[in-house]
View 1 (cartoon, helix red, strand yellow):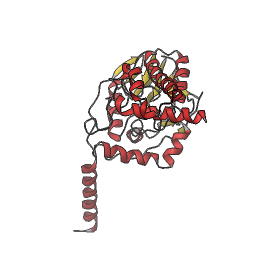
View 2: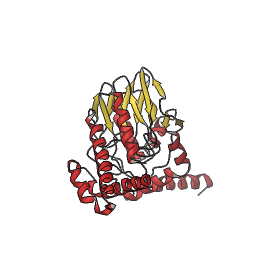
View 3: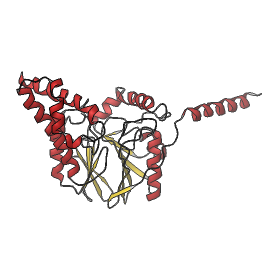
View 4: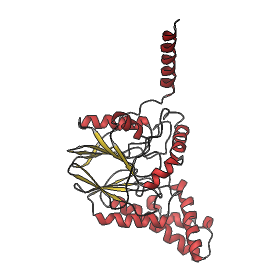
Length: 316
């Protein structure tokens, strides 16, 4: 066997190994039209697992006269490829921009697929997100998604956003305006909500969820309440939550009510001298309208503790 033949044999062997270790394709999900030229793929509500292959968020697709804009292309290279297949059913235009709502990897690791297909596409995010990924947050999410899905997201690598945006910035793509809303620490320190001005659609990221109780491990309850109060001033026709079905302002109102009821209930019980672990039954009763939301029982105890610690710190 000569040197050239040996090289090609080794190359084919390496390709075979890569193919074997790459996770399977994410199946196509339905496209829902929520406004003129605006589409959403509403993902499952469950946490990343082998069955949903990590795909659980709500990727958005906006068709402009200058190209396609994608919002939050999903949790893996496979999720991103599924989103691109959906785009191809709508248009032959190139993808020219991507917006990442926050640093949690179930929303943005699909950047990899977009960058591979459309290398010139700009990827926008808050500067805090860009910094955290540079410090290793993206690699942590790749590992976590691989573990949660038992290898179904294998082959995913970090492709970080490369364009920083902040509150009040407006990105023009053709005749469409994408206005950025950032109100400080809310679901995370990295949140942007993207208002597509002309059709009146707001992508809230995980500041608002519908049918699923949010994680607040990296966030601030009061900050999240304020962010939701502020975004409603856009008076948009459609709000697209980070998870769950899109709808009118009630999508945001429902999330606001959950957080406000949670915080105010804990504050009252704190004044009565109860400890956080003594509050759960009372707070749960006040939030029964959300009892059938995904992860209600998992997250409620943590939310009470977060609110308690915040109220306790303010008291001293």
